[in-house]
Length: 338
Ligand SMILES: [Zn+2]
Ligand SMILES: [Zn+2]
Image 1 (cartoon, protein in one colour):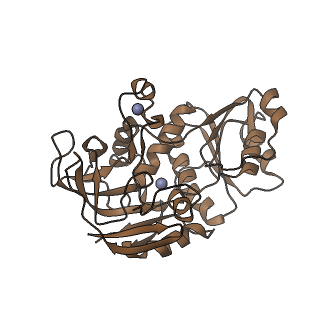
Image 2 (image 1 turned 120 degrees about the vertical axis):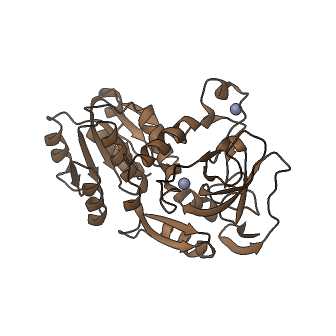
């Protein structure tokens, strides 16, 4: 089969490799669409360690061509892949924290993923997909599961005021999901005027460019208190510091962006004085997939506005480059495998 193979950091090429099979108890999926994300870029550049050669890709949909056993959808089903692998037997799996299983991993990072014609997946990680969900939008459901998991951890509830710092794909999904969960005042903050407009159209109550007035505007919109919840969706330490500034006394800061800094400044006294609850979210569980498939299938969440580019699979190299350049009008890039 054809696959985009990462042979070494920053070296990806189209190669002919052996097609996966059901020998190890996996179902074989013909991948039709996949999403490219910042995690792929970090694996590509070597920032996230991986083994080589590796086929990346953890956001993917397709069709079951060979089903292993009767655990997952049968051959012919249109499906989405849950890339989070877990053992099912350890302490974390037994208490329902399958996303933290130390024996688990991520398809596309720890095992071959979806940037190929076919991928092998544990049948229990393959879910049938409602017809109403479009092919190009569907890979974004994997991202939505991590947003769902994060908002559940932060207990975002009806009536909450929520500030979202950073309006990339994750930030915009946070806007839509907070709205769907009944948050009453949703404030999106980003430098990009284009992203602010997208946020306005999908449910933000107020959008702001970060400037000297930002804090006053947030206080104005939250009865002078600051926000109940501030979501950091930029992965920048300075933005995390801003989140702690904008949250109310006793509020929650949700860390969603991936931080790799090992040192730097945060308002530690605020963390203490304001009794800030700091919540970090990393992945998602199988429950989140079920909930997200339902929300997208019913139209409660519209993923289409979050796609900016659709390119063929063999242009993965260019797509990764696009992810790496901070273009103001870039959102999710979808690879079409047809
Ligand atoms: Zn991703
Ligand atoms: Zn486990």
